[in-house]
Length: 263
Image 1 (cartoon, rainbow, N blue to C red):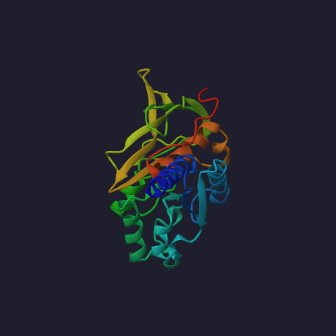
Image 2: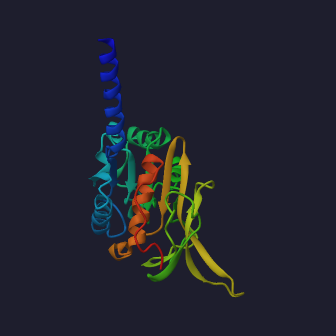
């Protein structure tokens, strides 16, 4: 009798192992914060949500009123994605948009304790005197940052072995090209740079445009791309966005490179 029990338990274990190996990974729970921005946030938020949902890897929630969110709700997510700023209110934040001390603490603790954080384009352009917020965001638009007219430029992979950029080649895209970003996390790793110009001596100038970093136990990322919907047209950029978010949430990347990885 014992022999049959052992056989049954062994078969049960094998079944459990095979089920575990073939089961789909749990969806990454994403909270996109938006609703305030000096850019066309309704369009870019909708586009970013589509980028994530088309991979079937993410479960996406959107809040347009982060200031009203119960701080404890942040624990329901794996990663926060910021398409939000108060840049229009940099001379003084209205009372109804102020973050409570509890929300500020919960936001930082979320990342410090292992949650992911990704910001794109102007998603960090606020709370300039809040040091931890700036470090979580990695880089931002600040005094000295600039850009010319939107145009097509080349994006270069700087770290070809990082999970986010593995298999992606250089590509060209249309966007605002931000120059002289203010980088708060001096230890952040540059994943991509954008071709800016030739200096007067003929040397090419490349501006860092995508970063990854660490804040406490949490993984962080920032990219200056994503000015408006046209910026999302490139398959390589869509993959880059999705991979940044998956990596920040899990530390791994399962989203494949597009068939045409370079151009």
